[in-house]
Length: 242
Image (cartoon, rainbow, N blue to C red; front, side):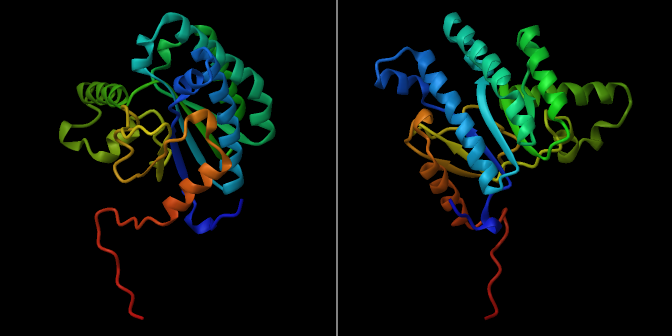
């Protein structure tokens, strides 16, 4: 695939939806859909690398997902651990940094240790894959506000000194730029509590394609749609003098 490098988003965030419906469509258990979705993750990482996308954020497991049946949750956690173990060397070989956002304290100690190991081993790489685990935008903001409130209590700064940039600095990945493009698969038209602060000026792309079926052609269609957008960030487009 070829792209106009000047119009490729620096940061793409993806809501990977449709694994369960994909499994139902083919008469398979829900976990089979998640397994197929994990393969799509691998493909999309390749698409982003080839296109020159520097940051890829994947909504893998929300805080609300803990309410799913225990066997499905356990299966998802095992699948994640297997994915990390399987692709750890691949991330290092391809110079890709792994980062985790979300309330990682909710995860098992074994999984936390595995994730921290890969984060440490890949921290020097520029291209980044950011996985949102036990994550929700509201939870992230709540945790950030608690940190800020504690700083104010300790006298580090006054409440009047709380700015947008200070709030951003207390989020889970403060050095990562806001997503230029948010993609949601499966035909749903909502954010589902994802990157609520960071998406203020993101472009959105919704596709009916189920996540396990998301292909190179679908990825290209998303980039082409993004390239056609006129991003003004609340301003007015400058008129040409020609």
